[in-house]
Length: 333
Image (cartoon, rainbow, N blue to C red; front, side, top):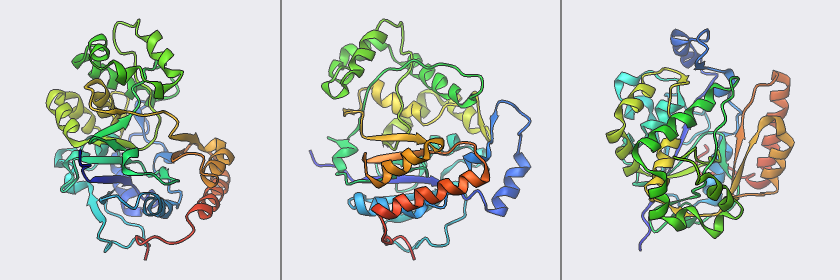
Protein backbone atom coordinates (compact mmCIF):
# COMPACT_ATOMS: atom_id res chain seq x y z
CA UNK A 1 0.00 0.00 0.00
CA UNK A 2 1.34 3.43 -0.98
CA UNK A 3 1.90 5.68 2.00
CA UNK A 4 -0.04 8.95 1.82
CA UNK A 5 1.66 12.24 2.52
CA UNK A 6 1.99 13.28 6.17
CA UNK A 7 1.66 16.84 7.47
CA UNK A 8 2.74 18.23 10.84
CA UNK A 9 0.58 20.67 12.80
CA UNK A 10 2.17 22.87 15.47
CA UNK A 11 0.25 25.26 17.71
CA UNK A 12 2.10 28.16 19.33
CA UNK A 13 1.40 31.32 21.30
CA UNK A 14 3.68 34.23 22.12
CA UNK A 15 2.84 34.80 25.77
CA UNK A 16 4.79 38.08 25.73
CA UNK A 17 2.85 39.74 22.91
CA UNK A 18 1.24 42.92 24.40
CA UNK A 19 -1.65 42.86 21.92
CA UNK A 20 -2.43 39.24 22.74
CA UNK A 21 -2.13 39.96 26.46
CA UNK A 22 -4.51 42.92 26.13
CA UNK A 23 -7.10 40.81 24.33
CA UNK A 24 -6.77 37.98 26.84
CA UNK A 25 -7.29 40.39 29.73
CA UNK A 26 -10.75 41.28 28.37
CA UNK A 27 -11.87 37.70 28.95
CA UNK A 28 -9.67 36.81 31.94
CA UNK A 29 -11.67 34.89 34.57
CA UNK A 30 -8.99 34.00 37.08
CA UNK A 31 -11.43 34.22 39.98
CA UNK A 32 -13.42 31.38 38.50
CA UNK A 33 -11.94 28.25 40.07
CA UNK A 34 -12.98 25.96 37.20
CA UNK A 35 -10.89 27.92 34.71
CA UNK A 36 -7.31 26.98 33.82
CA UNK A 37 -5.58 30.26 32.94
CA UNK A 38 -2.17 29.72 34.55
CA UNK A 39 0.83 31.76 33.41
CA UNK A 40 2.85 28.65 32.51
CA UNK A 41 0.18 27.70 29.95
CA UNK A 42 1.42 30.56 27.75
CA UNK A 43 5.04 31.14 28.83
CA UNK A 44 7.61 31.26 26.03
CA UNK A 45 10.73 29.12 26.53
CA UNK A 46 12.39 30.70 23.50
CA UNK A 47 13.19 27.29 22.03
CA UNK A 48 10.80 27.08 19.08
CA UNK A 49 13.65 27.28 16.59
CA UNK A 50 14.80 23.87 17.87
CA UNK A 51 11.43 22.39 17.01
CA UNK A 52 11.96 23.39 13.37
CA UNK A 53 15.56 22.22 13.42
CA UNK A 54 14.48 18.88 14.85
CA UNK A 55 11.80 18.37 12.21
CA UNK A 56 14.11 19.30 9.33
CA UNK A 57 16.94 17.14 10.66
CA UNK A 58 15.03 14.10 11.85
CA UNK A 59 11.87 14.17 9.66
CA UNK A 60 12.97 15.65 6.29
CA UNK A 61 10.18 13.67 4.59
CA UNK A 62 7.36 15.76 6.12
CA UNK A 63 5.01 17.13 3.45
CA UNK A 64 3.87 20.38 5.06
CA UNK A 65 4.10 22.16 8.40
CA UNK A 66 0.98 24.03 9.45
CA UNK A 67 2.07 26.61 12.03
CA UNK A 68 -1.01 27.66 14.02
CA UNK A 69 -0.84 31.02 15.77
CA UNK A 70 -3.08 33.77 17.16
CA UNK A 71 -1.44 36.07 14.62
CA UNK A 72 2.00 36.77 16.00
CA UNK A 73 5.13 35.16 14.53
CA UNK A 74 8.70 34.65 15.76
CA UNK A 75 11.00 37.32 14.31
CA UNK A 76 13.44 34.69 13.11
CA UNK A 77 10.87 32.61 11.17
CA UNK A 78 11.28 32.55 7.38
CA UNK A 79 7.66 32.51 6.23
CA UNK A 80 8.70 32.03 2.59
CA UNK A 81 9.71 28.42 3.20
CA UNK A 82 7.62 26.33 0.74
CA UNK A 83 6.94 23.69 3.38
CA UNK A 84 5.47 26.21 5.82
CA UNK A 85 1.81 27.20 6.03
CA UNK A 86 1.01 30.01 8.48
CA UNK A 87 -2.46 29.49 9.94
CA UNK A 88 -4.19 32.08 12.11
CA UNK A 89 -6.98 31.07 14.48
CA UNK A 90 -9.39 33.09 12.37
CA UNK A 91 -8.40 31.06 9.29
CA UNK A 92 -9.95 27.83 10.52
CA UNK A 93 -11.77 28.19 13.85
CA UNK A 94 -15.46 29.11 13.47
CA UNK A 95 -16.12 32.75 14.30
CA UNK A 96 -18.46 31.94 17.18
CA UNK A 97 -15.55 30.37 19.09
CA UNK A 98 -13.22 33.36 18.74
CA UNK A 99 -11.24 34.78 20.33
CA UNK A 100 -10.02 31.72 22.17
CA UNK A 101 -7.25 31.27 24.73
CA UNK A 102 -7.87 27.56 25.12
CA UNK A 103 -5.71 24.93 23.47
CA UNK A 104 -8.75 22.65 23.58
CA UNK A 105 -10.70 24.80 21.15
CA UNK A 106 -7.73 25.01 18.81
CA UNK A 107 -7.17 21.23 18.95
CA UNK A 108 -10.79 20.30 18.35
CA UNK A 109 -10.88 22.29 15.10
CA UNK A 110 -7.58 21.29 13.49
CA UNK A 111 -9.34 19.28 10.78
CA UNK A 112 -10.72 22.56 9.40
CA UNK A 113 -7.26 23.81 8.36
CA UNK A 114 -7.35 24.41 4.61
CA UNK A 115 -5.05 22.05 2.71
CA UNK A 116 -4.37 19.77 5.69
CA UNK A 117 -3.38 16.26 4.62
CA UNK A 118 -5.64 13.34 5.56
CA UNK A 119 -2.78 11.99 7.69
CA UNK A 120 -1.19 14.44 10.10
CA UNK A 121 0.78 14.60 13.34
CA UNK A 122 -0.24 17.08 16.02
CA UNK A 123 2.42 18.82 18.12
CA UNK A 124 2.16 21.14 21.08
CA UNK A 125 4.96 23.72 21.17
CA UNK A 126 6.54 21.84 24.09
CA UNK A 127 6.97 18.59 22.13
CA UNK A 128 10.07 17.99 20.02
CA UNK A 129 11.63 15.47 17.64
CA UNK A 130 15.08 14.56 18.91
CA UNK A 131 16.18 11.64 16.71
CA UNK A 132 15.72 10.24 13.21
CA UNK A 133 12.40 8.60 12.31
CA UNK A 134 10.83 7.33 9.10
CA UNK A 135 7.23 8.06 8.08
CA UNK A 136 6.33 4.57 9.35
CA UNK A 137 7.08 5.80 12.84
CA UNK A 138 3.79 7.69 12.69
CA UNK A 139 1.74 5.86 10.03
CA UNK A 140 1.70 2.32 8.65
CA UNK A 141 -0.72 1.24 5.92
CA UNK A 142 -2.16 4.75 6.22
CA UNK A 143 -3.13 4.03 9.82
CA UNK A 144 -1.84 6.11 12.75
CA UNK A 145 0.61 4.21 14.94
CA UNK A 146 -0.48 4.05 18.56
CA UNK A 147 -0.69 1.84 21.65
CA UNK A 148 -4.11 0.67 22.84
CA UNK A 149 -3.54 0.49 26.57
CA UNK A 150 -6.21 1.04 29.17
CA UNK A 151 -5.71 3.19 32.25
CA UNK A 152 -7.49 4.18 35.46
CA UNK A 153 -8.01 7.92 35.81
CA UNK A 154 -7.67 9.24 39.37
CA UNK A 155 -9.25 12.55 40.30
CA UNK A 156 -7.15 15.21 42.04
CA UNK A 157 -8.88 18.34 43.39
CA UNK A 158 -5.71 20.39 42.93
CA UNK A 159 -5.46 19.60 39.23
CA UNK A 160 -8.57 20.71 37.36
CA UNK A 161 -7.06 19.65 34.03
CA UNK A 162 -7.40 15.99 35.07
CA UNK A 163 -11.12 16.21 34.32
CA UNK A 164 -10.63 16.22 30.53
CA UNK A 165 -9.71 12.50 30.38
CA UNK A 166 -12.93 11.66 32.27
CA UNK A 167 -14.95 13.63 29.76
CA UNK A 168 -13.08 12.06 26.83
CA UNK A 169 -13.63 8.49 27.93
CA UNK A 170 -17.27 9.30 28.59
CA UNK A 171 -17.67 10.10 24.90
CA UNK A 172 -15.98 6.82 23.96
CA UNK A 173 -18.15 4.73 26.29
CA UNK A 174 -21.26 6.40 24.88
CA UNK A 175 -20.38 5.22 21.36
CA UNK A 176 -18.44 1.99 21.91
CA UNK A 177 -18.82 -1.21 23.91
CA UNK A 178 -15.44 -2.08 25.43
CA UNK A 179 -15.74 -5.87 25.23
CA UNK A 180 -17.04 -5.76 21.67
CA UNK A 181 -14.19 -3.44 20.64
CA UNK A 182 -11.55 -5.78 22.06
CA UNK A 183 -13.25 -8.91 20.70
CA UNK A 184 -13.26 -7.43 17.19
CA UNK A 185 -9.62 -6.31 17.38
CA UNK A 186 -7.85 -8.59 19.91
CA UNK A 187 -4.33 -8.04 18.54
CA UNK A 188 -4.82 -4.29 18.74
CA UNK A 189 -5.36 -4.53 22.50
CA UNK A 190 -3.15 -7.51 23.36
CA UNK A 191 0.08 -7.18 21.45
CA UNK A 192 3.66 -8.28 22.07
CA UNK A 193 4.75 -4.68 21.47
CA UNK A 194 2.97 -3.58 24.66
CA UNK A 195 5.07 -5.79 26.95
CA UNK A 196 3.88 -5.79 30.56
CA UNK A 197 1.11 -3.37 29.67
CA UNK A 198 -0.80 -6.35 28.30
CA UNK A 199 -1.32 -7.32 31.94
CA UNK A 200 -2.85 -3.90 32.59
CA UNK A 201 -5.35 -4.48 29.79
CA UNK A 202 -6.12 -7.98 31.05
CA UNK A 203 -6.85 -6.76 34.58
CA UNK A 204 -8.96 -3.80 33.45
CA UNK A 205 -10.95 -6.04 31.14
CA UNK A 206 -13.01 -6.80 34.25
CA UNK A 207 -14.39 -3.24 34.15
CA UNK A 208 -17.92 -2.82 32.76
CA UNK A 209 -16.69 -0.16 30.32
CA UNK A 210 -13.45 1.59 29.34
CA UNK A 211 -12.01 3.04 32.59
CA UNK A 212 -9.70 5.29 30.58
CA UNK A 213 -6.85 5.07 28.10
CA UNK A 214 -3.16 5.66 28.68
CA UNK A 215 -1.85 8.96 27.31
CA UNK A 216 1.82 9.84 26.85
CA UNK A 217 1.74 13.66 26.35
CA UNK A 218 3.63 13.24 23.07
CA UNK A 219 2.96 14.12 19.41
CA UNK A 220 -0.04 12.18 18.08
CA UNK A 221 -0.76 10.80 14.61
CA UNK A 222 -4.32 11.50 13.46
CA UNK A 223 -6.69 10.71 10.61
CA UNK A 224 -8.61 13.83 9.63
CA UNK A 225 -11.71 11.72 9.03
CA UNK A 226 -11.86 10.85 12.73
CA UNK A 227 -12.30 14.51 13.66
CA UNK A 228 -15.26 14.69 11.30
CA UNK A 229 -16.78 11.51 12.77
CA UNK A 230 -16.61 12.74 16.36
CA UNK A 231 -17.95 16.17 15.47
CA UNK A 232 -20.85 14.54 13.65
CA UNK A 233 -21.76 12.19 16.51
CA UNK A 234 -20.91 14.37 19.51
CA UNK A 235 -21.38 17.92 18.30
CA UNK A 236 -22.90 19.15 21.57
CA UNK A 237 -19.94 18.42 23.86
CA UNK A 238 -17.35 19.61 21.33
CA UNK A 239 -19.32 22.77 20.69
CA UNK A 240 -19.68 23.37 24.44
CA UNK A 241 -15.92 23.03 24.90
CA UNK A 242 -15.21 25.46 22.07
CA UNK A 243 -17.57 28.06 23.57
CA UNK A 244 -15.20 28.36 26.56
CA UNK A 245 -12.58 31.10 26.17
CA UNK A 246 -10.24 29.28 28.56
CA UNK A 247 -9.79 25.64 29.52
CA UNK A 248 -12.61 24.46 31.77
CA UNK A 249 -13.32 21.37 33.86
CA UNK A 250 -16.22 20.49 31.55
CA UNK A 251 -13.99 20.34 28.44
CA UNK A 252 -12.95 17.45 26.27
CA UNK A 253 -9.59 17.70 24.51
CA UNK A 254 -7.79 16.20 21.51
CA UNK A 255 -7.44 12.87 23.32
CA UNK A 256 -11.08 12.17 22.48
CA UNK A 257 -10.01 11.79 18.82
CA UNK A 258 -7.01 9.66 19.77
CA UNK A 259 -9.21 7.36 21.83
CA UNK A 260 -11.83 7.23 19.08
CA UNK A 261 -9.16 5.96 16.69
CA UNK A 262 -8.26 3.23 19.16
CA UNK A 263 -11.84 2.20 19.91
CA UNK A 264 -12.78 2.14 16.21
CA UNK A 265 -9.70 0.08 15.31
CA UNK A 266 -8.25 2.77 13.06
CA UNK A 267 -4.67 2.40 14.25
CA UNK A 268 -1.54 0.30 13.86
CA UNK A 269 -0.10 -1.12 17.13
CA UNK A 270 3.33 0.09 18.19
CA UNK A 271 5.53 -0.14 21.27
CA UNK A 272 5.15 2.37 24.07
CA UNK A 273 8.76 3.47 24.69
CA UNK A 274 9.03 5.94 21.81
CA UNK A 275 9.56 9.09 23.84
CA UNK A 276 8.96 10.68 27.21
CA UNK A 277 7.12 13.55 28.86
CA UNK A 278 9.27 15.18 31.53
CA UNK A 279 8.09 17.94 33.91
CA UNK A 280 10.26 21.03 34.21
CA UNK A 281 10.97 20.34 37.87
CA UNK A 282 13.07 17.43 36.58
CA UNK A 283 14.97 19.74 34.27
CA UNK A 284 18.31 17.91 34.53
CA UNK A 285 16.63 14.69 33.40
CA UNK A 286 14.97 16.53 30.52
CA UNK A 287 18.25 18.12 29.42
CA UNK A 288 20.03 14.77 29.44
CA UNK A 289 17.18 13.06 27.60
CA UNK A 290 17.59 15.58 24.78
CA UNK A 291 21.38 15.74 24.59
CA UNK A 292 21.79 11.94 24.72
CA UNK A 293 18.80 11.37 22.41
CA UNK A 294 17.33 8.75 24.70
CA UNK A 295 14.09 8.62 22.71
CA UNK A 296 12.69 9.71 19.37
CA UNK A 297 10.64 12.58 20.78
CA UNK A 298 9.99 14.28 24.08
CA UNK A 299 7.69 16.68 25.86
CA UNK A 300 8.99 19.34 28.23
CA UNK A 301 6.01 19.92 30.49
CA UNK A 302 6.12 23.42 31.99
CA UNK A 303 5.31 23.79 35.68
CA UNK A 304 5.01 26.64 38.14
CA UNK A 305 8.38 27.99 39.28
CA UNK A 306 10.13 31.24 40.16
CA UNK A 307 11.41 33.49 37.39
CA UNK A 308 14.99 32.77 38.45
CA UNK A 309 14.46 29.01 38.22
CA UNK A 310 12.65 29.41 34.91
CA UNK A 311 15.61 31.27 33.38
CA UNK A 312 17.97 28.53 34.58
CA UNK A 313 15.77 25.86 33.01
CA UNK A 314 15.58 27.74 29.71
CA UNK A 315 19.37 27.90 29.50
CA UNK A 316 19.81 24.19 30.29
CA UNK A 317 17.35 23.11 27.63
CA UNK A 318 18.86 25.47 25.04
CA UNK A 319 22.32 24.04 25.66
CA UNK A 320 20.99 20.50 25.26
CA UNK A 321 19.34 21.28 21.94
CA UNK A 322 22.52 22.98 20.71
CA UNK A 323 24.29 19.65 21.11
CA UNK A 324 21.97 17.77 18.72
CA UNK A 325 20.71 20.49 16.30
CA UNK A 326 23.28 23.34 16.38
CA UNK A 327 22.79 24.53 12.78
CA UNK A 328 20.02 26.84 11.64
CA UNK A 329 17.21 25.23 9.66
CA UNK A 330 15.81 26.52 6.38
CA UNK A 331 12.88 27.86 8.44
CA UNK A 332 15.16 30.44 10.09
CA UNK A 333 16.16 33.72 8.47
